[in-house]
Image 1 (cartoon, rainbow, N blue to C red):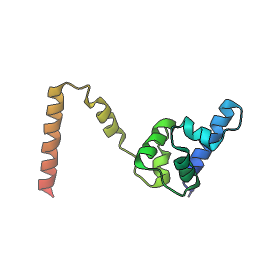
Image 2 (cartoon, rainbow, N blue to C red):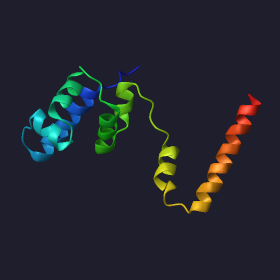
Image 3 (tube, helix red, strand yellow):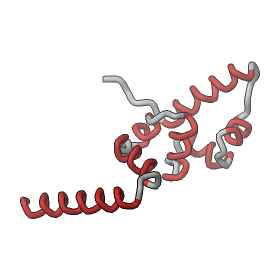
Image 4 (tube, one colour):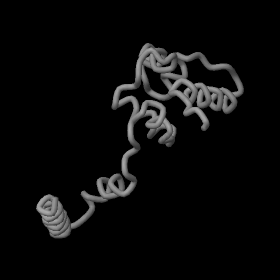
Length: 115
């Protein structure tokens, strides 16, 4: 079985990609600024001394569009359907949101009764 990459492995690969894009070497500090993480936090995360905070983990996943960061720290990946619903929720008419809420609530209550 293949070993999962660490957060440091993933960051190293993205740092290398960024350097290839710029065609020059980039310091960790510069790369940390590029991805909008404090350079000290970045260094601790990169070297494995610290796991990324939930906010930094989400930032890394969103910035690189790479859910492997969740795997690297042992956090379950969010459900894609749930993410879609959360993003679309505010765009739905109020009546539809209320109907969905009532339907979900009734479904959960029925499941609890069956257990």
